[in-house]
Length: 548
Image (cartoon, rainbow, N blue to C red; front, side):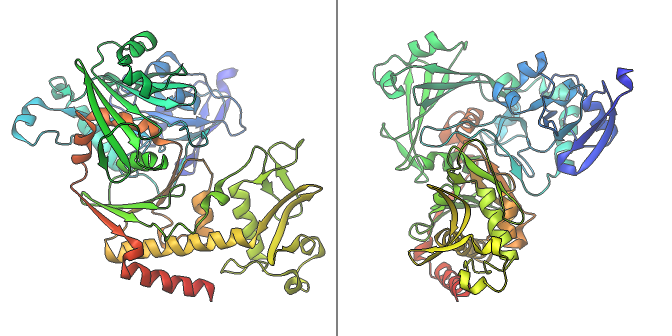
């Protein structure tokens, strides 16, 4: 019989595989096997806190979203495989990640949270004092100047579930009190300038999340809509949202004069009647806006935040102090884009013996190398002795006695630089060059020095947050395998991908953007690393060590 059939349910973040009968409810299965899963409604489909990410081990389909899934979760979350565990019926083998949505205590930054305000407490304490947030996830999408990522992921140390579950139990015990509380925010609208239109997200305070989204195809930019005083008409004609009293607008470049935050964004605000409008614009470089949003949605603790797509600015947060680590001139020599950029048909795998490769589309010639393949190739070459620990690719003459002929024929030299061909046919050459290895060594020198400097001069590092727009599986593991990052931090490092622009919706949890920032950051201190004697001393020492 159908319901006698059993399926495997793999809990990805805990390396556990459970067996379940067909028709078993996923939430009940997790609870029965003591797998921590948050819920305020005990699995009745009301709170939305039991969100998990589900995939099929064979790449097949998972269950379609239920009505409650569609009501509580944003469309982009549903498309990424998120479902409510309490709404999911097991009908096939599945892989479940119960951690990916988390933001506090090991916490995914791609989360929209809402703070609940106690009216009586607000009279006695400082305004906007932080209460426990209810966590809900929202995925990011592309930004005009960047490649649009298809997925988001995290890798790193495990979440402290006990803390989250304790918070949930405390919230359950105070349900009666919550009826007397009110949200400190109302529904809001996030407008983002996109190529060929305006992307919008409707934020609903009642479900602590994005309630709807869409793209208004229009040739007129947001700046013209604002200048022509037709923003209210634009919203009324194109977006279904009642009782709107606040709009946050994201622009792709500076247009309005305003207040500069952290040398990253230009903040401008205005009002249209009772409608409060706030504009966030990148300062100088569009990437700075993304960095700003990542910063304000980082996990709790003393965290060093590094963006691979914007190495010039790194940050360390400690006790409400924001250390702005300006690495101008230091990191400018690292052309990280050359390592991260891929074409339309990259090489996506290489055999362990380096003899053949797999392309995204086997019917077409490759045009680039995917980063995981590049790193895998380097690791294999290091294993066979063709690349040394300082990332120097040896000349073929040095290897003739050590390597097989099928390997030797792939080594060459051009413009006095050594090369290793990953793929080579007429008019198509995909190779690993010494210049690329030099960039990896420069990245290692910088990251090793930066972590050492922060740890010794600013304070103990609880987490290292590595971020990049494009999603790369196992990127962090590869960086540790190649010793680009200090192995001491292997269990403290997390990787987040995706465009964080949608995270601007978190600003709706306070009365305005400025208040949001002031409630989280007490002081800002800039450190210009290229002028700092201690940093330069450590950098020179590391450089001598790796280039000698």
